[in-house]
Image (cartoon, rainbow, N blue to C red; front, side, top):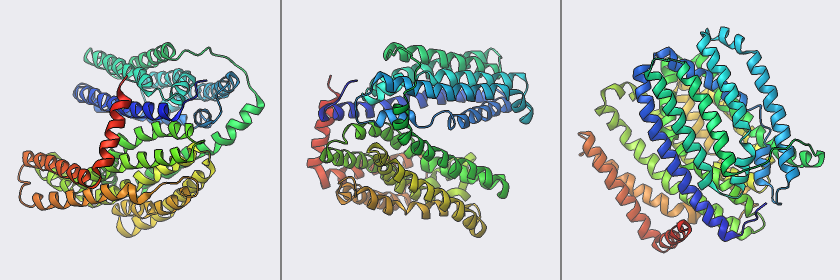
Length: 484
C-alpha cells in the first residue's frame, strides 16, 4: 500500500478539492437540466414514487456498513490484503442480508405506499443497484486513502451522465417510472466497471478475527454517529410532520435547504478530502495542525460571506420572483438556520479531525449530546414559537461549537483567531455595504446581481488587505500543486 509524505498529501489534497468541487458543479448542472425536462414530461406521482423509493434505499445504507470503510481510510499503518478481504467479507455479508430482506419485503413496500408494479420494480432495481455499489467500496477506499480524488470523480461523473441520459431518453419515449428503473441499473453497472478499471482489486473472501476486532473498534463508534444523525435529523422531520401543518413544514424545508446549500457545496467536499488527508498526517502534529487551520480557513472564507449575502438579499429575491413570494414567512427561519450553518462550518471539520486521529468516541459523545438536545429543545421551541422554533433550537444548539473547539485543541494545535479574523472582518464589511446598497439598489433582479458582484469584490479586497502575504503564499502552493 502506497505511503505518502507531507508534500504529496498537500498536493493531492488540493487537487482533490478542485476535482470534487468541479464534479459537484458539473453534476448539479447536468441534473438540473434533466430534472427540468422530467418535471415537464413525467406525472407528479411518478416523480414522487422515485423520491420515496430512493429515500427507503438510503435508509438501508445505515445498516449495511458498520464504519469499516472509514476505519480503513483512517488506519495509520499500511493496508494489508487481509485488511481489505476482511472488510469486504463483513460488508458483503451485511449488504447481501439487507438486500435479501429488502427484496422479500418489496411486496409489502408496494402495498404500504400503494405502488403499482412499475414502482415495485423500481424498488427492486434500486436494491440491486445498492448491491452493485457495495462492490465498489474497496477500490474507492484505495483511491481515497491515496488521495486520488482526481481518479475517484471519473466513475461518479460517468454514472451521472449514464443515469441522466438513459432516464431522459426513456422518459421522452413514454416509459414513465420504468425510465428510472433502467437508468438505475445502467448507472450501477457502469460505475462498477469503471472503478475496477481505474483501481483494480482482486476480490477475495476471508475473515481475520484480529483485523476485524481492530477495525470494528473504530468502525462501530464511527457508524453510530451516522445512526444518531438519522435519529437527530430524518426522524425529527417525521415527528414534525405529525405536529405541524404541511405548509409550515414546507417553510422549514425551504429555509433549511437554502441555508445549508453552501455547506453541501463546500464543506461536504472538504470533509471528504480532509478525513483521509488528516489521517495521513497523524504522525506529524505540526503538519496536522496546519492542515486543520487551512481546511477551516478555506471553509469559513467561502461559507461566511455566502450565508451573509443570502440572508441580506433573500427578501429582495422573493419580492421579484412572484412564484417565490409565498416563502416570505420562512425568512426568519432562514436567518436562524444560516447561523447554525455558519457555526457548523467550524464544528463539523473539527469533529472530522477527531475521527481522523482516532478519537471517534469523543465525536460520538458530541453526537449523543446533539441528538438529545435536538429532541429536547425542538419540541419545546415548536410549542412556544411554532415552526420558527425549529430553526431557533438549531441555532441555540450550534453554539455548542465552543465545546468542540475546547476539546479538539487538546489534541490538535491550531490558532482559531488566525483562522477567523480576516474572514469575519471581510464578511462584516461586505455585509454592511450590501445591506446599505440594498435599500437603494434592489429595485430589480439585475441590480441585485450587480450588488452580489460588488459584494464579492469588496470581500476579497478586504481579505487581500488583511492577509495578502498569506493569500499569495497559499495561491502559489495551489498553483504548484495543480501542475502535473
